[in-house]
Length: 271
Image (cartoon, rainbow, N blue to C red; front, side, top):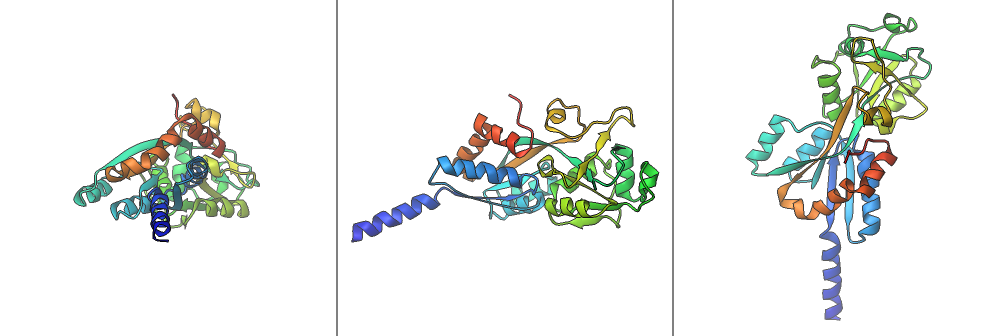
């Protein structure tokens, strides 16, 4: 009986010794979940738990040592680096995929394209009616992710030219909530990762050359780099857990994992 107890304890220890927690970016969330499901099918002893909350939440969990991997849709900030340094925690960064950040409107909106400058005007509050950008006489209802989101930061830096969001912009706690709100509101506009696109919303073509060329977000335009709003998706992890997380990260970076990247709707790494 004693030997059975020892064997059971050993089995429990072995199964939990491969347990990993991933936390962070809502953009990375659907990809990490699919990768984890696939990885656990072939690695029966592994247990991987994936939760969202935003890139800032994931990186804060890394600082607190309550997550093995922080998922992020933006690069780590200087203050986050300093917190890790102050805590004596060395970390590593890995790009696992790319995303074409999509600007979405309600399908009933006749506007199909906007310049970067027009998007900046809408999100800073200078443009507040669709008639000012070729649409109907209708108030623009602007949706954004909340400030803990990496997508919020990326959009501010790369689309709004580092300008501040207008106080009238409605912050949403999750990407799915933006899709739902835009699909139900005729005057709405928002932004989401490419994998969140569905028929309930319409993606706009975007111009970064003041209206000379407009490109729609897609796997093809992200791959050939013609779509102007493409960003890397990151995993951050502490060097102390590198041995335990590396098999999963290696799986994502390998051919099978990168195939899943494309299946989910993101852009695989080019070899």
